[in-house]
Image (cartoon, rainbow, N blue to C red):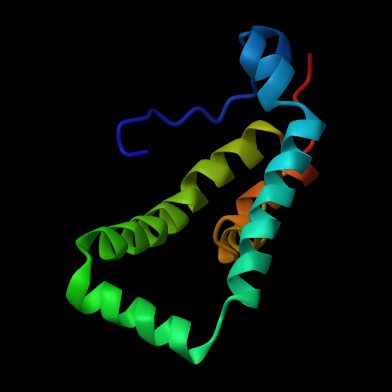
Length: 123
C-alpha cells in the first residue's frame, strides 16, 4: 500500500484485464468474500471464552512472535484500508468520508461489504 500510486480518476471496466473485469469486479465474487469474512467472525465469536482470551494474551506477550506480528499486521492493514477504499469510492463517484470510515470500522468484514455494495465501473 505504501508504494502504490493513487489513481482517483474513473476507470473503465473495459480497460481492466480479464481477471479484474470478470472475477474481481463480479458481484458473486464479492458475496463469496463477504460470506467468508463473516464465517471467520462467527467462528471467532463462537470460540470466544476467557480461556481463549488468556491463551491468546499469553501467546501474544510471551510465546509467539508470529501471533504478535499477525495481530499488528491486521491492525496496520485495517488502518491503511481507509486510503485505498476512499480511492475506490472516488473512482466510482460515491465517496463520503463518513461512509469510508464506516466500512473501515469493521476489520475484514467492512471492506468485503464494500465490495458487495459498491457501484459497478462504467464500460
